Length: 484
Length: 103
Image 1: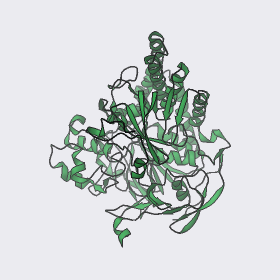
Image 2: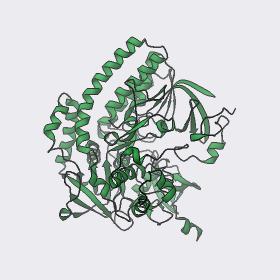
Image 3: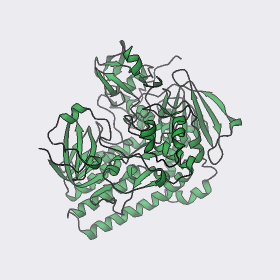
Image 4: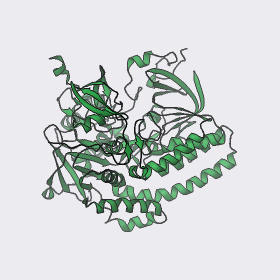
């Protein structure tokens, strides 16, 4: 079986930074990434075929990513980088199951870093399954790296600064935005915000730049507004919007309809924790940071020795935090492997933490505005599909809830929610929140949809095309036995 | 609803154009585009129909997670249009519900 001292899963800012730090110290690193090209969501590069003629048109993230990738490329002799590689399982003999170009293989690790990022929080409301409704992240990928606009007249709905980033990108690309709905309210909270902003001037400059571009284009930025419904015959044709109170509950008298042909939803992000969960790392629920997230020590190690987690996949906090956390994990692993003295490592880690605490002050301000409020759980009606894969409606979930001893995992058995190919990613996060809200229950009571290998659909032919797969037995498919 | 061209030409030069076939209709895609993006640019938003309610679905998450863009691509069903690059002459079919497939 293949083996590596340090395996990193995820080629976004966190994974790349960790790889650079560890490689600089002398560690042999293996970096696995699912995409064709490195960068993750935020530093995504364009596919082969496209040629960038004006990097400014692609926004500041694109340029920032280029610098990090350049550093990564300069360390190539110490880093084994495998693209197009899905890690679909993790087994408790410290091995990973990989799928790559139609075949499977195993890879054993001494130290592992999970840097799997996050995705847009799914928020069910009537019409959210209509073609023409996109997540903000999906729309951003289309505009930034495929240079296709999601529509001719676009509505942005959600909360937080990523909406502004997307709006700026759409406008720069020549797109038309009907309005931006911000469920929260930052002008009302600016005084509390001042403390967090103080000293974080680069964030402020970035924010002001986005706001200016939106104002200049004459796009209405409607705070304390929410999207109630998407309507249309087979695709989005109009959206019903309304003002909300501080709990994001709509004032129905203010509801009105706007003609749009596409909608981009950005209600914050959910951490991708499938792999840390499979590894049986301890998790705790923190809605502010993206749902269930792994518990970590100051050196980014999870409760399972040798397994580290950084970036949005370990608590949503953005690219800057991911980079610092990645550096910490890279240093910590290099030290554990004897490449850096413990004293030097802890000194370097301390300086990363100093920068982190400054960034986190600012994050707190944004999170206070964008923390999902109860009104968000009340948008779906009885007929609204909650589980997109299996067509399970809210009505069916409510019927299952009549037995109030149930946990979220029981929805699988009772309704088939979470049994489809997205493996609970699209229904789980909102179902947890709706259950907590409906039953007034804690996250511990509600539980979670436990991921299972394979964490994404893998064709049987891919599993068959291998000679190093573990024999699947026992809980979660582990412990595994080597099968040469 | 009429749709204009939604490709953006500012900031990048596109790869070479070629034809792909969707449900028998020929549309243009450019090298480097995913099938999902090429279909969107051609004004095709419905990529499949669900099994139970037979509802239309299109690109949603766009990053390979939600599985809403599953199509039959070159004969292989349940292939994610958002994750599959268009290639010259590739053949794509919208996935129907089980019921419609049987009839």
